[in-house]
Amino acid sequence: MRTDIGSRRTPPPLDDLDRQIAHALQLDGRAAFSRIAEVLGVSDQTIARRWARLRASRSMRVLGLTESAVLGDTVWLIRVSTTPDAAVPLAEALARRTDTAWVGLMAGGTEVSAVARSNADWAREGGEALLLRELPRTPRVLAVHAYCQLHQFFGGAEGLILKSGMLSPAQVAQLAPPAPTPPDEPVRLTADDHKLLTRLAYDGRTPVPDLAAAIGWSPSTVRRRMAELRATGALYFDVDYGPHLFDQGLRAAVWLSVPPAELHATGEALAAHREVAFACATTGPANLFLAVVCRDTAALYTYLTGPVARLSGVRDFETYPMVRSLKGPGPFLGGAH
Image (cartoon, rainbow, N blue to C red; front, side, top):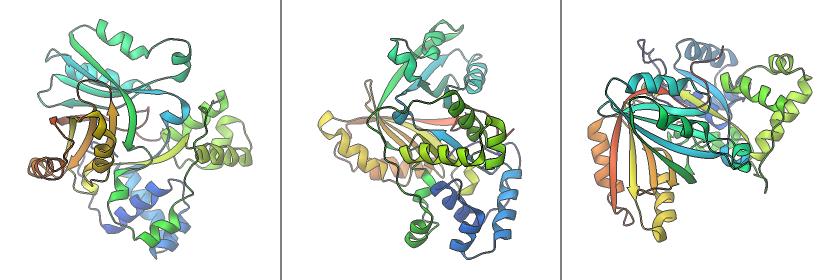
């Protein structure tokens, strides 16, 4: 999920069927329209028309993404303080990189936040993320703070849409694919795998014949390799959508300090909150990070002083509203090319 898709134009009116389609695609981003239609009790043509409208208006898209833990990659949560004139250009430059996601400007406009991935091959060779080497040498950057993700409590394939309740438990059971089984060792990708994953990162619903033509595989090979990658959890599908879909107008980063003995239980409890789009344990003075999505500042206040405050493990926290989102999930800006 992201908060800026379609923000530069007037959002189209959406209804519960649109939200049900979003829920269905978060469960299985490549589910056939005929299957979704059957479960929702509408016609194939209705689903196809709705999806075409949602894609054309940039309200929603499906991305094929890779799970860092399964590939052995390291995830970094980055905060960069800049001079006031440098924040936007830096954020735009970070958003264009393929090793970043979730790039935004935080409150005050002088701090840029981003999520970066360090390739497993670099780590095996004793290297570090290229971005982390470059940022400190960037002009007008005042400070760089990078926190390593240690454990993910919620996020990735478990998109926030799954907490929406738009589908009944019976409908979820009909649409959800089998849960992946991560291998004991990191999954190694081939050059052709990277070609496949690049196409899916632009558009997770790219037809199999188009994927086969782009890679030079047969359609059956494409289907088989996608199934293998999904079975390990290396490949998953995420729905990228605008805030108007569920009336979510405010996104905030929340950094919490929790005693180590209570970290896992607190993280699991926070992951279940409907406001939490992402939750992970990190290195650094604050050891638990949340991406929180609410309707407005009043709803954020209610959440922080209610469900968060009631958790005995939370000793301290800091909250930073996002004032502009430049990039959501995935390595590429924009939709399918």
